[in-house]
Length: 175
Image (cartoon, rainbow, N blue to C red):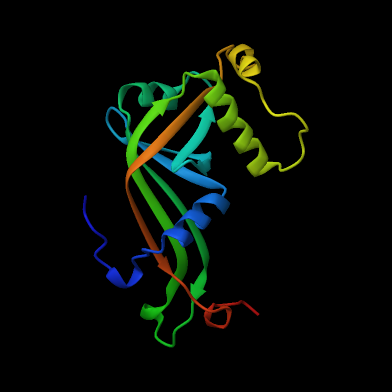
């Protein structure tokens, strides 16, 4: 795997990366399609050192993941534009994490229920009173096509992270 060439931006702080992956709400999964790469933004959860996301049991994403499990998953957040007297030196304050690995579809209903419950709690903490059960996941069908929900797990083989932190006073604010 290639290393980050812009070493000044390389983030090696594992705690910072973990916190960022737990709090950020959307990631983009990059997959190998037939003629072109195929990327899809998804809500996700980071726990047990893996990325979890879900989707309908059918469609292009599900088809590709069943054929080509190696993926890249990117999570990023932009914090603003960094001012500089020289226009060509203006920059962006950000953090990004890229995870590389193989996708597996979770077939165990108990594991799928646990992952989906953690996703529900991430995006709607405390809203639902009862956790999802394996029986519910086994029987639940999408209203769109009648397929079961699919839960996917990416256990990264390689992780890179970059950041360009800036103080609030360094960021451009339109007055």
